[in-house]
Image (cartoon, rainbow, N blue to C red; front, side):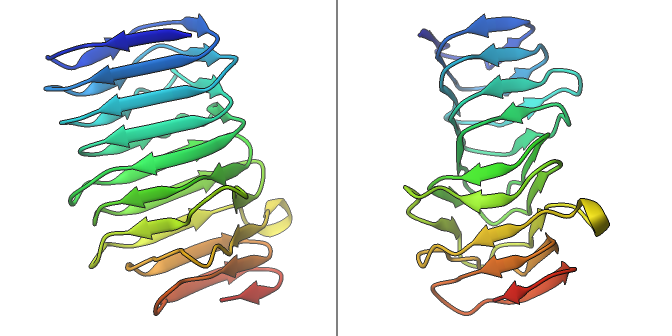
Amino acid sequence: MFNFNDSAGGLVVTGPVSVTGLAITTKDGDLQIKGAIADSGNSSLTNTTDSIIQTAGAPITNSDLTINAAKAITLTDTNNNLKGEVKITNTGANIVAITNSGGLSLGTSSVGTGTLTLTALGGDITQSSSSAGFKQTSGASAATFNAGTGVNAKNITLTNAANDFTGTVTATGKNVSVNDANALTAVVNSIGTNVI
């Protein structure tokens, strides 16, 4: 397990990094992923004051991933290989955008009011069995879930009863199922069965 705690000034990961278990914590500047991270264990990325940003060409490979940022989270490299549960936390009117080359399994997550865009390029978007739901702060912007179109479309299954999507949900995939503890506004683009 590799632990790195940077007390101030943000952090730039230039990589490539190859570890078994990775925990990075920083503040007072962005956490910038500019080099590939290959973690054969579980990873956590934390920025207590600012954003977590990934540069194209710097994919992350790991099992479970916990991401916690005070501001924006943008992990959109198309070669990301997030093989386990992804837990997401951020605050305020800050965007969250995550792309995975395979499917995307969401763990317990709580985000602010910024736009949310989650994309699975090669598999289903689901929630893990241990998830306590996915929650947006009241008055949030749109939440977009994309699992492909046409013959390449995969399923979107977000059926945890504790989910609370306060922004308009747009779900694009094959069979789409979304539950919400409260009122839900949804736009569904699918070629299969929809349960909202």
